[in-house]
Each structure stands twice: as structure tokens, then as C-alpha cells.
Amino acid sequence: MSDTMEGKVVLVTGASSGIGQATALALSKAGARVAVGARRADRLKSLAQDAPGEILALELDVTDRQSVNDAVAATVERFGALDVLVNNAGVMLSGQILGADTTEWTRMVETNLLGSMYAVHAALPHLLRHKGAVVQISSTSGRTASAASAVYAATKFGITAFSEALRQEVTAQGVRVIVVEPGFVATELTTHITDPAIQAMAKSMAESMRTLQPQDIAEAVLYALAQPEHVAVNEILIRPTDQTR
Ligand code: NDP
Image 1 (cartoon, rainbow, N blue to C red):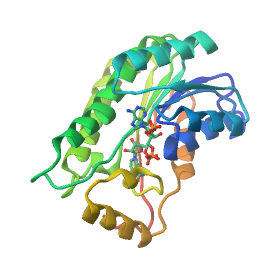
Image 2 (tube, rainbow, N blue to C red):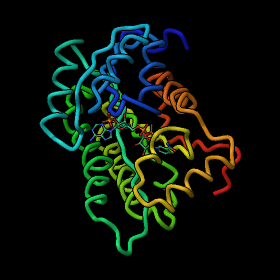
Image 3 (cartoon, rainbow, N blue to C red):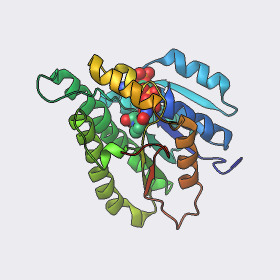
């Protein structure tokens, strides 16, 4: 894997922790020049210090279309191109529909769904120029919805719909669309859940199994990106072996 991404320019959203951070590091180790975006800029600075290759740290809020446009423009200005967008930024504010705080719904839709759409919109002209790729970090919740995950699942189902339409629009022009659907990964994701009962459920679920690690997802992303140009790995479903549902 050491130089499979040599010379490629990648933008990873949500790279300040978890899957995004691990993916940015793995891509850097594989030779890519990586722009990393998130709201917590301090975390991005330490990522830049740990990475072996060139890193551009960008303060980015994907819910703000201008911020997304600026991040793509800054990446192209610094590295002269954009080959791969890893659309990873996301929040999971699980809870029942009845009595929900709907501002949490707005945040999930604006971050997970609209934010990733803005990023594709801004990056696509560059990806078309370089026959690049879009990696969409979806979820098993993008395949199967369950109680207390209605809105989160709706955002991830939305990503699947958007990605398939995108694929049909750009695949003949050489742009590959890769949807990654992880099961339970040990990250900060569940710590933002505000309902204490759901938060406790997520914790006990994590303790009941050998969860995936962020690096496991990073390896899957690298695998898909390392394929020859005529091979499009369009979907990767990756669960912990111990996860039954
Ligand atoms: P983390 O909470 O560790 O990472 C989420 C990342 O998204 C952070 O870097 C955060 O950065 C960023 N983010 C959140 N809101 C915004 C925003 N408005 N603008 C820019 N960046 C933002 O969780 P994960 O690594 O687990 O999550 C990454 C992706 O993986 C998400 O899309 C999630 O849905 C998906 N996923 C995770 C699974 C899991 O079990 N962990 C399973 C399936 C999918 P900051 O706060 O600094 O802005």
C-alpha cells in the first residue's frame, strides 16, 4: 500500500477525529497530498504533524456552502488539483421521533446530507478534469433503518440515493463513486447523543463486541482507491464480525 496514492490530491472532510482522521493519515502514508477539513482546527494541526506527507489543514464547516467552496478552492490552489473527495463529516444524534428536539434533525440533515452534497457540487468540476473519485462515508444505517435512528438513517439513505444518481452521471467520464457503509466503529460519534438512555445503549452495544477501528475503514477506502482505473468498487459494507444487527 505504500505508494498507491503517490501524487494524488485528496480532500477529507471531518478529519479531526475518528474515521476521517485515520483515512487522512492512511492516504498520507500511501503518498497522497491531503487537505483535511473540520471545525476543530487545533486537532487538524496535530494531524498535520503526525502525517508523513504534505497536509493542508482547513477550518471547514460543511453546513456552510461558502466554507465548503472555500475549502475546495484552497485545496486546488495549494496542490494544483483535486483527485479524490472523501465525504466523511457526519453527526449521529440518535433518538426517538416522539418528542425529539428537531434542531438535532436539522443538524444531521445539514451536516450529513446537504454538507456532503455541497462538497460534491464544489469538487466535481475538478474530479471530472482528473478522472477522480468520490468516497461517500455512509453507514449500515443507509441500508437498514432502526428505531431511534430515523433521521440519521434518512440522511444515510439519502447519501445512497444521491451517490447512485451521481455515479450514473459521471462514471462514463471516468469518475468513480465509492459508497462505504461501516457498522459499529469505535470513535467519538456516539458521545454527541443527547438522550442518556440511547447514549447508554450505544455504550453497552460497543462493550458487547469487538468493534471496528477507524483504521479498518481507512484500509477499505484505500483498497477501493487503489484499483485500476477500469475497476469501480461502488459499495463496501463492512461490519464488526460480532455485530449481529
Ligand atoms: P467522529 O465524531 O469521530 O468524527 C466526525 C467528524 O465529522 C469529526 O471530524 C467532526 O469534526 C466532523 N464534523 C462534524 N460536523 C461537522 C461540520 N459541520 N463541518 C465539518 N466537519 C464536521 O465520528 P466518526 O469518525 O465515526 O464519523 C465519521 C463518519 O462515519 C460519519 O459520517 C458517520 O456517520 C460515519 N459512520 C460512523 C460509524 C461509527 O460507528 N462510528 C458507522 C457508520 C458510519 P469537527 O467536530 O471538528 O468539525
